[in-house]
Image (cartoon, rainbow, N blue to C red):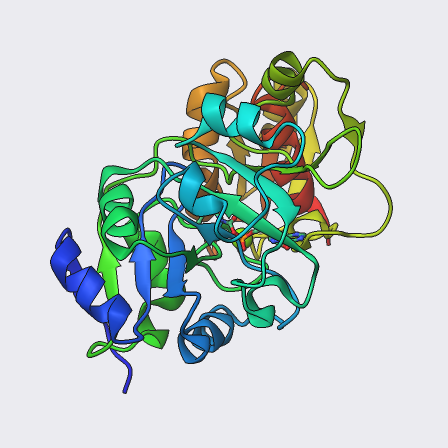
Length: 308
Ligand code: TXA
Ligand code: MG
């Protein structure tokens, strides 16, 4: 059966449905996630199916705290304790060697696992009471813009969930607005595999190392050239004035320019892209923020939205 599941802040009901093998849409500080208990392979399979995500693209394990993370990934690797202490709960995913407790379907058979402790009161309570790990990708269809509100989630996957088995925890709009930063601690020096809510400057400051650029082939699906894409063409400009000129010349164009305040730009990025992506829009013009702080993540996501 499908149909709109309950939209609620009822953690008791969420826990009940999780334990019965249902899916729970969870609010996090970054974006909404589509969560399953990693010990329910049937539920994890449904996550892939609802998302339309190719199996083999690994899922992040969400846990209540660093001690629980260590039950799923080896948190004794260099830098893990430092980053966990400084950034968790928060928008950072650590890639560490996987422990046998993590099923193949979660990691796509990789020897590594991504672990993260999200910062949202409803989800923190759910994770603490659950005790284990929840595998959760962003709660959007594969390749689409991530959801930062329940209404985004309903637009994307509302009709694909099961009213009797699943549940949407409504935690309001996500305050950070872009996904977690993914840092690979299985290589030396560590690599940032995906820019996100924790800046590379902050990580370098905490670790006293120069981070390596992510090397080689697309190691995470977020590294595919085209991802997070609206249906309308997106054109990037470096300068707000160039954006305004283009806007005047092209009928039906929409301009996104939030370069003044990067925190607000991140918080509203996906809502801006969804709002701009209407049938009447001929072109989305986006002004790129400077490549510092959250600007790294914003430039990355806008670049992917513009790639065809
Ligand atoms: O902020 C976030 O990280 C959100 C919220 C819901 O927590 N989650 C999220 O998940 O963005 P998802 O599945 O949309 O993106 C996770 C990325 C993917 O690009 C995936 O390939 C990569 O993390 N990833 C996860 N585990 C990995 C692993 N073991 N090795 C390499 N990449 C991994
Ligand atoms: Mg995603």
